[in-house]
Structure formats: C-alpha cells, structure tokens
Image 1 (cartoon, rainbow, N blue to C red):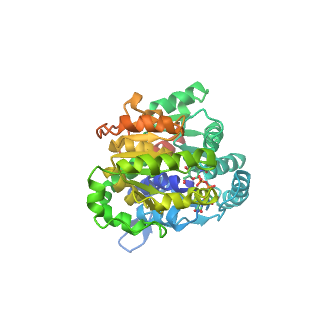
Image 2 (image 1 turned 90 degrees about the horizontal axis):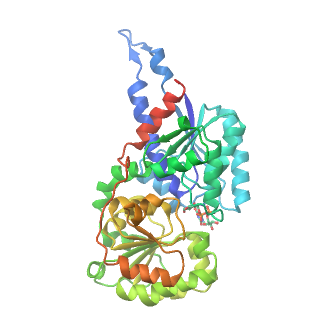
Image 3 (image 1 turned 180 degrees about the horizontal axis):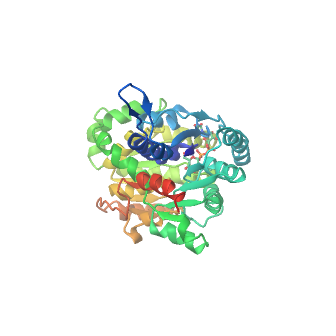
Length: 407
Ligand code: UD1
C-alpha cells in the first residue's frame, strides 16, 4: 500500500509525527524479509502486501525554520520526501499553487491513499486534488466545527470532510457533527486526539527543560534586558503564557490595540506575560505602530515562535494561558492549565469548562477578557483527559486504513 501524507503549516507537524512513527513501527513488524542459509533474502508475499510505502509531502506553507524545520527535528521526523515550496500568499494563491504542484506529485506517485491532517490551506488543497485524481482520502482530526464561516479553517474542514473516505475524529462530539451532516457511519472512526500522542511521547523531555533558559534563548532581540532575578520574577506570582495569530484578532488595529493596552497596562502589572509572537502578529504590531509599546513593557517577555518542547514546558509551568490556537486549547486541557481562549467560538468544545475542560471563550472584547481573567486566575490546575486521548491514536489510524481494504 502506498500512502502520501501531507503537512503544510506548524500545527500539522505535531499531528503527522505520530502517524509517521506508527507507519514505521508497522513496517518494522510486517516488513522484515527472511534470509536463507545462502544469504538470499525472501519476502513473504502476504507480509509484503501489508508493508506501507509512505511518502511525506510538505507543501511549504510555513517555511521559517522556527515555524517548520525545528519541529521536524524536535519530533524526530525525517525531512519531508517532497517539498512543494509554496510559501506565503493570499488564500487563493496558496490553495491554487498547492493544488497544481500536488497534482503532479499524485500523478507521478500514484498513491492508494492521501492522508491529510487538521484544517490549514494545505489540508484543503491536497484533499481536493486527491479526490479529483480518484485517490482515497483520509482526514485526521475530522468533524471539528466552529460554525463560523468567516474562519478560513472552517471552510477547509468542511471541504476536507465532505471529500474524505475515512474521517478520524478526536472526540464523540466531532463524530456526532459528521453524523448530523449525513456522513455514513462506516466512514467515521472515533480514534482520539493524535496531538496527544505527541504530547505523551515528549512530555518527559519537555519537563526537563529549564524555564529561564528557554526565555533567554528565545527572547526577541528587540525585547529590553531581562530582570536580573528572572527565576524569582517568574516564580513569585506565576506567569501567563500567550500566543495570538488569528486574522480576526491581529489584522485590525481596532481589535489588536485594546488587547495590547490591556496586556501592558493591566495584566502585566499583576504577573509577567511570556508571549511567543507569530510572524503575522509582529508584522501587524509594527504596521499599527504598537511594537514599541509591546517591547518597552518590562513584564511582557517577547519571544520568537517556540519549539515544541519549549512551548510544552512553558505551558506545564504557566499559571494561565491566553491563546487563539486550537492545539494549545487541547494541550491546556490535558495539562490542566487554565486557559482564556481569545475567540468567540471554538471547534473544540470538549476543551471548554462546561465539558470538563480548562478553557473559557472570551472573544476579543477587553471587558470580557478582563472579567474572565479575574475569575480564572484563582482556578487551580486540573488535568482532564477526554476519551481516547491516550497516546495511541496514530496506531488506531494506521490499523483502520489497512482494514479499509479488507471490508
Ligand atoms: C496558518 C493556518 C492556521 C494555523 C496557523 C498556525 C491556514 C488558513 N491558517 O495561519 O490555521 O493556526 O497557520 O501558525 O492555513 N509567515 C512567515 N513565516 C512562515 C509562515 C508565515 O513569516 O514560515 C508569515 C507571512 O507573513 C504570512 C503570514 O505569516 O503571510 C501568515 O502565514 P499563513 O501561512 O498565511 O497563515 P497563518 O496565519 O500562519
């Protein structure tokens, strides 16, 4: 069986890594050929049939080392076999160019399956291409719905799920969404959250990292000098951790400026805030002439986008998280970090307090963020583990793909 799997942007890498490892493990078990007494290698035909020929394609949507290459290394993945080098652009440019380049790859490689993960432009572009080339499509992280059509990711999810032959859902709520949309039951496989496979495999390594070292090593050059007693500074009342990159939060000055004012004028006077700043957000802060205010605030520690282990370590120690990232909401849930989600909706309701999770939706209205902050700052860390978020999701996925042909 030949599988082409696709990644494009940062959140994809944590989702594909366990799949790559599970495929390799499967091949280690089933792919061994036997060597006879003359030293000739004989492969067992029935064994060879279940060997997976796997090709990893990177569309190149994210290309900065800190947004891409560093994750391959940290997660123990080989470099992608094929990089389409698409880079930045408008949505139509990214999707269109990815489709053109991926079509050539599919025609040349003739895979039995294309496997896509998540909801980025690469996911949608390669799904459409695969189906138009009559190749079976599997979607890992299917069924998530924010019902917010202004989010590019929601469009990507709907298109990808509509086209998929196998839909791997992280939780029962997502499986239920698919049923309501009329997806046949035999295509829906509730397998758990693959990103938690990655968290489980790497949490020990992350726990061994030193907070101060992470901050010193990743501080943006323009950030002012760190306090001499950084350890005490972070430990005294704890620290907040933040990421913010969604167009709805950062692309308009009228939205970004009040958030920044709240962080600088109120939040940071209570506790330090470690902010791993996405390239899109840096660009906007500069454009809106807000960058100086951010970098001159002594309690705001501005970092480059962080590596996987570094972010995990900071999350493990944070008193609370502020984020608009879907993946971090899920990691906060499992780690128990109280989380303010700067969105009006989420495609991951299982992470919310009302479903037992650690996260509260606060949108991007400062009044609401402030109120929720004052509530959540008193909440104790309480790890939650939804069903099948157990570190074995990738193994279930590989098995389901192999089983598909048997039925
Ligand atoms: C993409 C995903 C989003 C995901 C996010 C994680 C889509 C529609 N969006 O959004 O779901 O949460 O990744 O980071 O696919 N840039 C760089 N270097 C890079 C990549 C981007 O400088 O390596 C800058 C460029 O100015 C680019 C901008 O960031 O135009 C936005 O990148 P893009 O890939 O368009 O979307 P993200 O906002 O990163």
